[in-house]
Image (tube, rainbow, N blue to C red):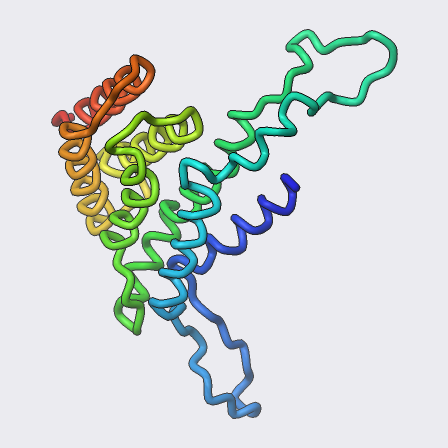
Length: 217
């Protein structure tokens, strides 16, 4: 199941900022252009799939019933010095983080902007805006579960990396979109409802990270 989900995430995330490549030779007389951006509707559908099945607060609820049974295979009574319990949060964050990391990779965001000049209708700013909706909107009026705490923190850290002048590989379009995104999240958090201590601590940490990233370096 884990491998299948990893494959699904990898495949779906590639549609966002993706291009179709036609390597036909001239004598094949293909009617396709060598490079064609993925249509906006398809990119939006990919974001919708990730939002529902990877980023949503309940995306991993169905897995919870098997977590207490996920024991490593072992012989006799040998036990790892790090413990045998399944590292749930690490596995889930790797899956969610893989999608975010690909979409916000320097090569991807640069391709998004470049392909805007020959047909792509999904800007970096629009992509980041939809990621904010997928990662934050569902629990702004309630508490944030553990999955989403890891996801939201990873997203904020990645956006902070993009606006850092010392980070190479990102152009001004990407940096502007990331800056706007962090400011948007900060505004949203100001009005968010936190009814337990864990969520209050989580959101305080997000604001700490955002404020640190927004400081002039």
